[in-house]
View 1 (cartoon, helix red, strand yellow):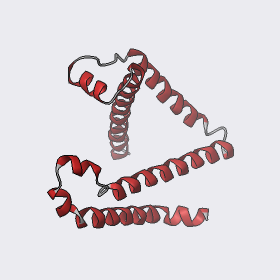
View 2: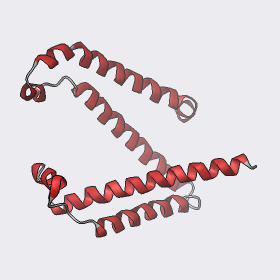
View 3: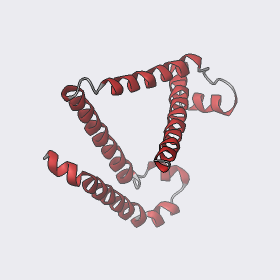
Length: 156
């Protein structure tokens, strides 16, 4: 099974993604005319987009599960090499903790109104803020690492 997934895993993932997108398009585009004819309130009650949302949720859960299994197997089979993974996880946790500690819950303005509308507590607002800031920093870090490694490979 491992050899099959290592050789054809990306192909399987791509095929599953294509199947989910096709199913979503068939269900959504097949009923879009009727959906457009509904009032805004009735549009919120329909399930025309549920196939796509469900597919995305299932694929995300499968990906997260497989990621965790891969990390755990890697930690068990290569404990010395897993120090880098543990250090990276600790760095992300520290980054999130710093952003959580410095986050200020939004109580005024349009963000405060949205927080009230969705019933976010101050703690939940701080978690959202910390998650967004952490995601932005990690994305910028990944982009920077990509540029640096490409420049290094260019001069090799």
